[in-house]
Amino acid sequence: MWTADDPLQDAPRRVAVAGVSGVGKTTLARRIAAIIDAEYVEIDGLYHGPNWQPRPSFAEDVRALVARDAWVTEWQYSLARPLIAERADLLVWLDLPFWTTTFPRVVRRTLRRRIRREVLWNGNLERPLYTFFTDDDHIVRWSISTRHSYHRRLLGPAAPRRIVRLTSRAEIERWVHGPLAGASDCRPR
Image (cartoon, rainbow, N blue to C red):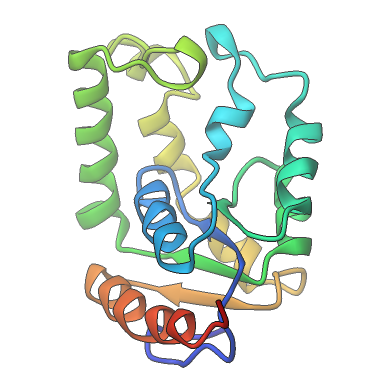
């Protein structure tokens, strides 16, 4: 496992970003895609159909995504994780402090999306705020209940081979502007 300061041996072309809901996977994935000149595909858009139902073509869509030469996406959904990990050149794990960084972020994002009625994937809207109390899968509750799952997945024997673990916003910036930018600058065009 690498840190924010470890140089990348070569420029990654297929990158997955892992972490608990609300940690900033999508934001970082978009930044990485711009730096390495690869397409960013939001995996939630592949997964969620209308009315929050899983899209029947999800597995097929993930297989088509990972078959491409270059891409950046999030590492989530149990069906997709092994497919993504098998083809990814690099997995970036956002392991930020939960209660002081991730939790406030997921709450702010959820409130903003609900209050502004932001349209998400395939026409979906954040569920009403009261569902925090009634829905075990409410995104904020999901974030809380799964906050330790990545430690098991990414520190265990079946972990993907190339992982960069970033544990603070400062480390994210250091890695993006240092090892990632440096490796991407050296890539043949």
